[in-house]
Image (cartoon, rainbow, N blue to C red; front, side):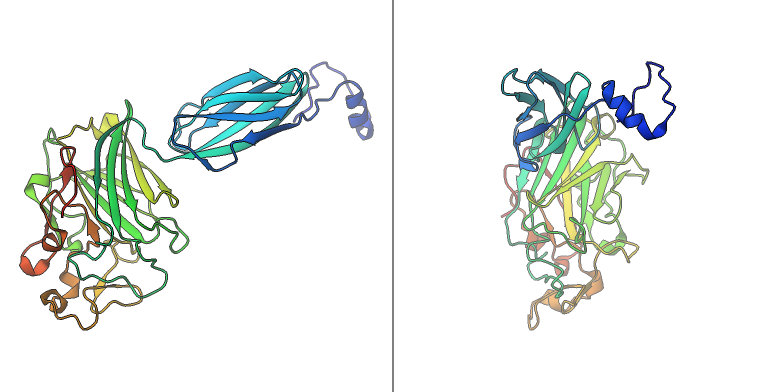
Length: 361
């Protein structure tokens, strides 16, 4: 803390500055401790009770810094005049909120920090569509790369959820086994989400890249596209390819979630008629199209079309032409195995909306 020399005293001997200043009341350090919650505690509510101790009768102020920016809520109280105990109810936002607590008494002050984690999406839920576990094999035959870098379940999409507040839209995917890969919490995955706003004037049925070998069904033609991976900033484009901005991307290993946060003023106000088509595959930053390749059989760092020895028709299909989708969420009555099978014709993905109550069979 900087010394306050506003009184105008001139101290001529630097070697005795500290002693003389203490004699005139140099600011001191005040003890303060957060006893609850422990740093990193996971919560599901929009507020948390923070408790601790400090010097009796000290003023206590807590600032809750949300990870996604915006206003920093500040609350305050007085420590108990006898015990020094204090308690505050602090607002918390989505993801990790860092709470800085400061105690002040006279010219002495002290501070400490804790944090809480909340991955319950705020606002109104417009879509919450689940997907079966264990279908992370595309049309039913795809294999993971053989390298141990790829943990089982890393490409198993289990849920797509969309919610909105008065200012933001949250688009979240959940992965069955989301673990750091290549040093990044979302280092294995590449997710594309094609969004259809029925009120838009321009749409596309193209995939993010032609090399992905699929299109989007006409009833799910998209007006906005989102793309996220661990080693590059997320992408947000309209149907003409124009960037719409830079969404925030928050990944949480523990809950297995990856969430894109977008301003509602640009994204639009989501209704149950909006359609969301999601495609999960592997990320490969060495390709211009960002996706991990297929071979037959699987290689150390390539997906396999089929298990060794499988005689299904797709096993003899050109690996460079199979749809690059390890998992998707299909609407009710639509089989993923059928939708992603290139031997049946052109592959077109269909999306889900707020009127769907379950994923495909």
